[in-house]
Image (cartoon, rainbow, N blue to C red; front, side, top):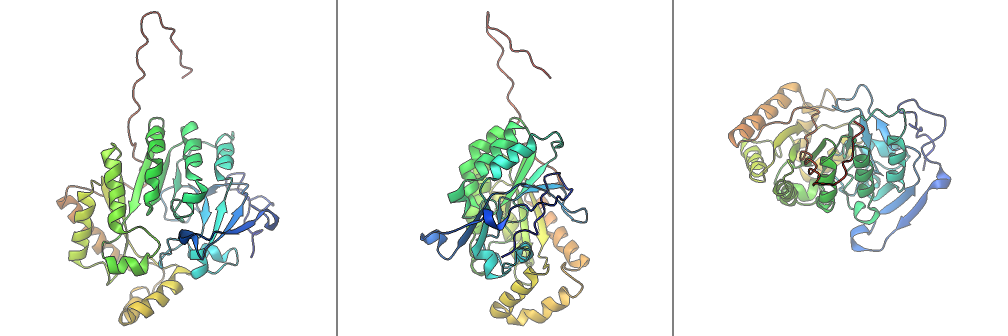
Length: 347
């Protein structure tokens, strides 16, 4: 297993000579409980957790925090599978069962946010692997991460398929009182048979929509990333309508479709899955993705148009790219009573 090729990003984008963590800083654990059976955790003490997104990326943000590498959600299409190869770990079953845990992520983030070099840019989470995957129930890294961002009034967003985010709902409400917070849930389709084989480690789509509903009931606008739309399996008009209708019924404030893309690492694993479960589709996929990782523009535009038209029909609209939604406006401070001292603001 290789750790030392991960460069320290402590200077916010300018790679240093030291590695993020060395092999002597890794503790490997297994837990004999049903939810963690077959999973190995590699606990590391990271030197940096703020990651700059490459300039060539299509992402609408520049900085991310990823407390985990690898993901027990085991989504067969996950584009992050290739990142396990950087550690000489298997990008197939190894990605699903060999989880790297940055156990000191909250403390490191707090230190980095307090650096003079940090300019308070938006931080995105859950964009590589899910920060509310099963491991979070044991390691509880997100409460400390959210608290650090809140204490520095640093804007952030979270994308998840995990229902565990409801545990941190009070922390997110508090964060929204001081900064901009965006919350999105990923629900690409409702088909139960498809979900069980393509996203076997995730909560069911209906449970994820319950998260959207619960956030709305607490006054928190929650968007849905309708991802991935899987060609020839979840893209016919009636399935798209069914999914958008359910998203609207859950009270989502936005829906944004994203067609399946197959980067190296994910492509091989997904095509193996496809050959096992839907062998008749293999030739069609080879043609559709013949030019690279992304489906043709005409196909992407067709899906986007259909979903946006359905969203308009059901009273929701697409999120504006890169926009963090303020969850709740800060409440005005109560006026001091007669004779009470007044605390002056420095701002």
